[in-house]
Image (cartoon, rainbow, N blue to C red):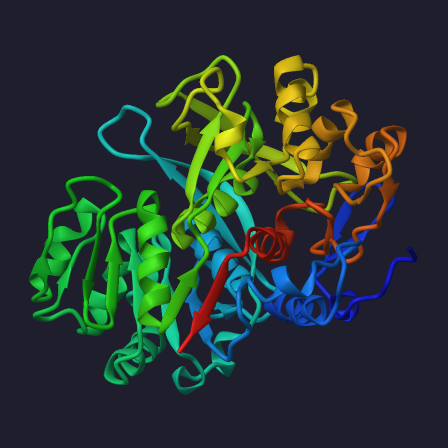
Length: 451
């Protein structure tokens, strides 16, 4: 069957494809348009071929809505706390604009990786470069249904910006949902919108919130979330699953078909975003998600790699978060799971040498269960011999693996483009997460709708 052009093919993104590596380009439209275009296009099709799902499965995915959310960004906001809600909400069909004072659409904010490392407070290292999708001076609270405020160090200086505070007050006065995590509540305190409101935050923010008149709720774990009317607060990114779920509910959203069990195949130096974004996005829907790694057990951690595009001939690498596993590889019963997700990064190149890993991946494919693989993850599928006759994409440098493995190569142009071929969803890199998660949701029959 000839490949058919879908609507998202005409939508631009912030990378051009070079022969082997994407090169950054600034100033493009919101990615959610491509997700919504794909959902509309796929629902009109029948059969399951490239870039398609059947009408039945397409109607069981995230519903297109007019919901629109603003993400308030700044330099050295926490890496996960910006990208996870940004991409998860888009995967659910919500339009998200990311803005930063003093910057315009296409500019980048540097992010920070914050995590406990055994010292008296968290450590910090440089994260990804986060591309903004709108211009701060052009936005109006009236155009949005909700506001998300990431934590990290950005709120320290954003809380001094009167334009930021005025914007937050407009959302609060209109009683629109506001979701703030970690240090983001510093902005709420400075805006004067937490008096007599029950909320939590990263523990170090307690004195400021108490002084601002908030009713403080101690975070017994870093997963703590609190709801008070239109206000959703969380202690840290550990609580993203509940945090995002509560925000979706505050926006009038509901989820159907999420009673699924999903397995993540992890390894050391998998890409940071490529594991955490889909992991928490699926958890937020209500799915049971297990993450395993050969020779490791629940509670063990996998170091991750931050892969970014910084003007060189290939991507750069920086250390990412340590990702905590929650299940044992040796104890996995593949028959108990509905789908398999394979993150990219550098882990797949050595996992592809592990016969148990290959057998696991082959089992999911042979049984027709959904398999979603991104970036270098397709190295595992090629080594498992399951790409023969399948149409798929991957990070451009993995084209050799795909072609030699018998697959039909589909160019990821633009880089956020994903494809569904039967039970297989493939993407090229982490910018593709909104489409990647949305297409997996379609195969699983998960639907997000808004009142």
